[in-house]
Length: 107
Figure (cartoon, rainbow, N blue to C red):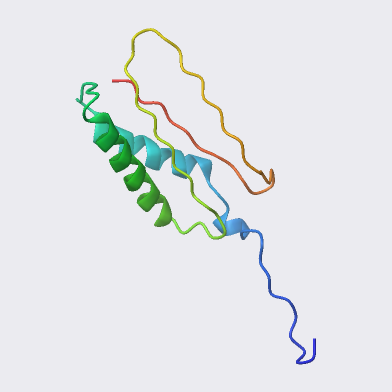
């Protein structure tokens, strides 16, 4: 480089800004409790509940200032009738820095 500067590309998060599963799980758990406690399954309302919960979780996670992370929030609400649910997801993953958090709410 002619001007003496070096590359300053930062592709990994700092250690202090690393994704913290326990902290994120607390955000998810508290949001689910606030939004779903006392509600009964209503197929007419589920779409609105799902969008609202997703937006709330995502905005609360953005407040935690995780640098260099793309936050993906997925919320699934279903009625319990004794059936099982299996879900899958694929993505490119860096095992050193990427992680996930999940929570289950049963009313």
